[in-house]
Image (cartoon, rainbow over all chains, first blue to last red; front, side, top):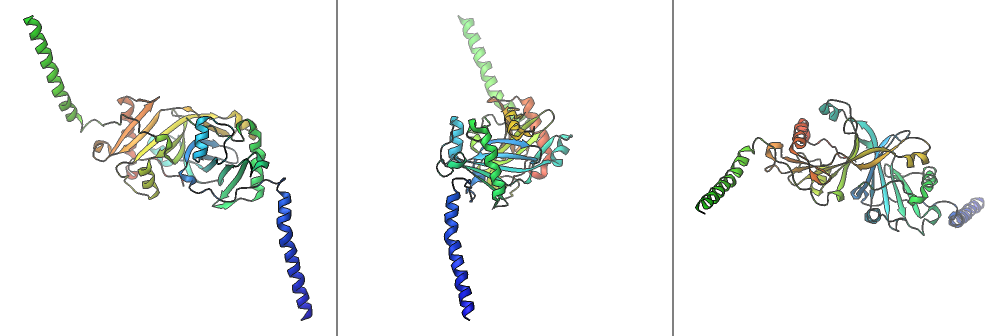
Length: 174
Length: 174
C-alpha cells in the first residue's frame, strides 16, 4: 500500500513537473518556431473572389483564392503590405475533364472543379502575433482538421520567396 | 411655303406611322427572337463563388462563375429550376503561365488569370420575360459593351442542350 502511494505521488509529481514545464518550453520556442492558425476563419466560403489558378505537377488542382473584406479592399487599392486583419483563403479542387460539357461542345475542352483537394489554406495577417513569419499566420485544414506542423512549416519557407509582394503569390483578377 | 407645310405634315405622319408600327412588329417577333439582357447587373464582381473552370480550344481561358444571392441560395439548396431573380455571372481571363510563381516552385506548374478575355457573361432568370429562351436571359459584355445578337444567339442554342440542369452548365464547388 505504501509503495502504491509513493508511486502515485511520484506520478503526480512528474505530471506536475510536465504540466509546469510544458508552457515554459513552448514559450521559449516561440521566437524560433512559427505560430500557426488553428481555427478555420468563419464564413470564408462567402468571401469575395481575388483570382483563380491552376497548378499542375504534384498539386494537380484548380483553385480559387478568396479574401475577407480587409484583404479585398487592400487588393483593390493596391495596398502593400497588407494591413492587419487581412485574410486570404485558398480553396482547391480536383481538375476534372467534364464529360457532360464536352458532350455538348462536341470536343474535349472543358475542365471543371471536382472534389475538394489539397485542403483549404489560409494566410492571416497580424504583424505582431505572426512577426516571426513575415506578419502572416499560415493554416491548412484537411476535411476541417488542421494539418500538422510538418505541412505548415513548408508554407512560410515557400511564401518567404515572394517578399516584394508581402509573401502573397496571388494577383487580383480584374 | 404651302409645299413646305405639306412636306412637314407628310414627314410627321410618316414618323408617326413608323413610331406606331415599330413596337407592333417588335411585339410580333417576340415569340421567335430571344430577348437579351442589355445592362450589366451592378456589383457582380462582389458576388459569391459558384465554381471555377478551364476551357481549352478556341476559348482558351480560365474562369470563375459567380452568383447573386438568389442563385447561391438555390445552388446550396440544390433547387432546380432556378427561381426568378437568380443571376449567374461568368468571368474569364487569359490562361497565363506564371513565370513569377514557377521561379519560386522551381518548375513550370503554375497557371494564373491574366487579362480579362471572352467578355463577361450573364444568365438572368425571369421565367415570364425570357419564356422563349427557357426562362433565362443571356448577355455578354466585351469591355463593358453588349455583344451583338450574332454572339448572343449562340448562347441559348448551346445552353438549351443541358435541359436537365435548367440550362446551367456549372455545378457548385463545395
